Image (tube, rainbow, N blue to C red):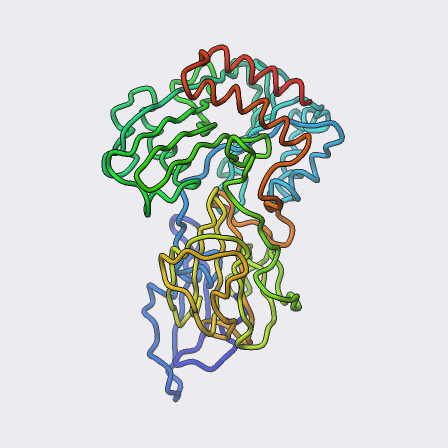
Length: 441
């Protein structure tokens, strides 16, 4: 935690911080005094500044691994409460919703949301809202945009259009190279490649000569030259080392034609038993040193040193490392479909980078390494590149869809796969998908 910055003796001590700034409004001045211990020398000033300006000391030297943020969307259902969705499902700061309500013109749309209305939002990786839209119809909407002085509001009168694209290709090196000769997705190649990479172990098992088919949905405003949202709907990958076919369900996750999830069930905590939570996920935590609001993106469990840490789901270790000043011993696991977990301050790491792991497998031991005042595990869950509260986030719970949910998926995925296989015109498929969405309201 950040207030552990000065908790133990070091070779250097924090003397003062003074805030000024030429660009961002903040500069931090530190001076240090050596202390007679056997610990390592004072870190360079650039490293100290980087850590102080990072959202958390824990993350100072663990840069984001995911692609840039993309628009997310939701269609309001009967019984939905916007405040509940905002905080519990979308993981946006509730204070931001109150800020939007301060605009009287915009507040009348927020206070009158109804089932069937389509909502879109764009958020940064740290969970801060950048843009928000409510569509009263396909051609009428409202938009809030983050500005330097707050949020601006405007009414939208542009037609919101949905277009489907079928992409076919042969792998040549990395996937993005194979998409570069497709003018219909100019500028979107990276986002599409990143989306498929979330669902398939491309970096490990992809080989030149593999073939793929993708069904992509793009959303446009009629007067804009480029799409504002690009989503993968289905894919078929035929390769030397893997063959897989899957489609997106209404829950946002991908399933095979038989309804088997591409991501297995996910445990709530990465420990065999519950321990006291010493620090919760908190998007509004105030930095104890700088005084700025800087979120705490993880959940801290107070555990004895050496407590086994277990993988909450199947995945692959994509990073391991040690940073004495901040994260200590840490590792990062990619679980697929945008799910990623991080484990910091470990006493010992018991898996290697690149290793495939199974749910429940011991991956390390909790400890007190890095910037820490006591033994604990700092645990983070990231979904689609954004940190979320692991204790409250909606987690995959089944290996295969069942009952009415399976029936609905098969009915809709059959149409999607028909479009993917070029057995159904994309214009007809787009119309059917719109009708399906309307029938679910």
